[in-house]
Picture 1 (cartoon, rainbow, N blue to C red):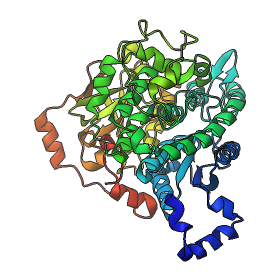
Picture 2 (spheres, rainbow, N blue to C red):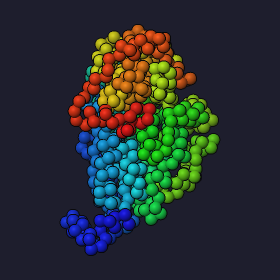
Picture 3 (cartoon, one colour):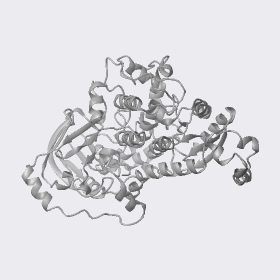
Picture 4 (cartoon, rainbow, N blue to C red):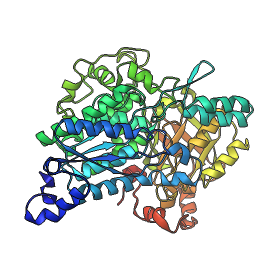
Length: 552
């Protein structure tokens, strides 16, 4: 066993004495030591229930003959961090989480690991750690929140953010906002739409690192507890068979994840995180593959924010297994990939079927013949930009309009709520990239305000920052190179015409090369916004969004 280095032989008597100080018996010490990584805390609604998941995983490990040992890691609630300086600290935690797990797992020589995340950056951070440490590992999340009910409709957190814009523009009463506030998020769990957390929990299932059901079983269902017990048993099976994360996450399984990503219409953040995950798995991934996959994978699901359908509806329709079985009708998946069950994808989905074709469309009757995410390139984003195509209104798939330029999210929000943005405008928010932010903030507040004010059919937003999975509309993020690296987004001026063609993957600033060269000569060197602490270190180390915003 890997853990023998801390428990076997005369020289390890001091180590055993410390295990005994923690209350472990010789019998427990002699079994495989299984690290249970939890991000439970009292601030994230998707994480307040993780103590129950931990206990269930421990029981599963014990039943299968292991010794479970729990240790924590941090987690940020993106919703609470949204719209202020706190959002600078969201993406950066992904690297902290991966680093901290690496330290704990290797310092204590765990034989295997079970990871218990749920929300936003915690999921990819733990996946990256699993690949880096590369001992048998299983992911099991806390599960999605149930949707709220308001005036006969299902609602979620994205509804709340859009409602702020509606109140500001006089389209909604403050009394209705107060009522919505009470009903939008009715249970614990990751927010109920196909936002970043649920996107990544679903994709963990597709990658093979999590058991079937991980992405969609609601947090408050007892089935989630049973899944956690099975996860504890599964990791012992993987240990016995010596199946490790890098055996599971391969070029083919990442292609499977991208395929399902396209079919689901996941958060644009999934591109950022899958790129970072591929990097940890030592698998080269170019953004061009996104459009290649999108061209051949139909969009089969429209979940919130693209519709009023939520994760619980996807669960009832058969979940990710059912979606994969539908995609398999056109041979769009590699079925030979090994998974956390110890079985192949083919074995996992062989009996799956779609139970509700209003939630998961038939492969022959998709929402669109192309996938839910698109990469745009042009002189405004030579290295690429990302848009959730499935959440863009048809009339905005092509757009040409004058730029309204802002050097921070706060400036943009003030202008939007101050009704300074008009029909046809292209809002440009820059110096919000990984380096420039620093931290690449999500722009849910400005995009939601635009939607809530009824402008999503005529206004686009472009940024070198990123978007929440709850964002909808013509919201184009991850513009690379970012402004802080001297990218052309730094050269845009108010009134410049920007051309957007999502269908053909184009994003262009309609300014001559000569004029851009002139502006570049006069561009002032970037002055870091933060000059101390972790954010300062992060800004110095982080790579471009086009390469996953990983540390160089």
